[in-house]
Amino acid sequence: MQIIAQCPACGNSWQLKGSAADRRINCRKCGKLFKVPRLDEVPKATKMIKQAKGTIYVDETGKTYG
Image (cartoon, rainbow, N blue to C red; front, side, top):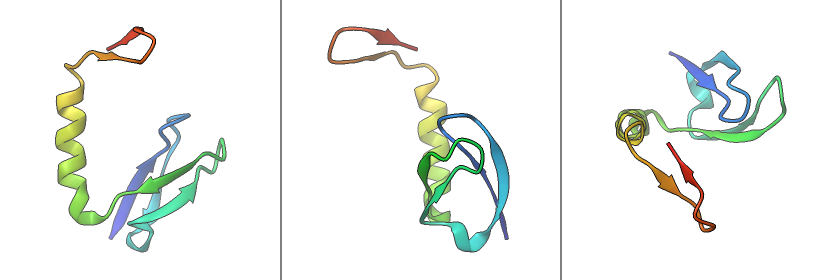
């Protein structure tokens, strides 16, 4: 099984082996460390991303995002 990973920092994406699931990896382009979700977490993560697209976030200083 192949996993397509996308760096949350720079957006670079590439294919990984299924064994990369539930591990932390460094982005090949920018070097940022991020976690590849477990295969059973992927549907939950996809649902959260879809819900977040319509959400406005406010940080501790009051700045809004979204």
